[in-house]
Image (cartoon, rainbow, N blue to C red; front, side):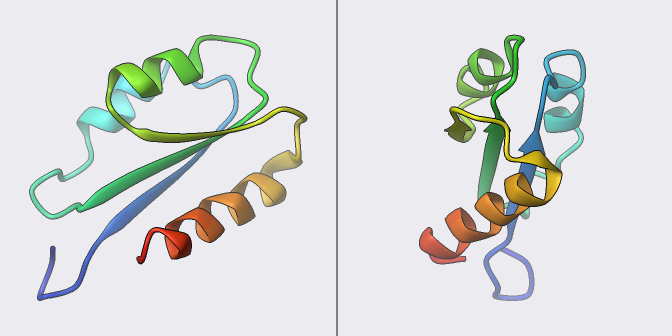
Length: 82
């Protein structure tokens, strides 16, 4: 929480296994309430790594492109009460 407001990080991802752990480690966890990742039909271990990191993960079966993936991030954040 920051200044009494909930903070949610949304992470649109596609084949992010090489960068996901580092990105996650750089999130200021002391002020972030939720982290949401949407995977856009990655062909690597992005989803496995996200789940290992206890990130709430949503997976597209078919690639929707960056804009479509971002849209899912925002929709899920709103659904979660952010």
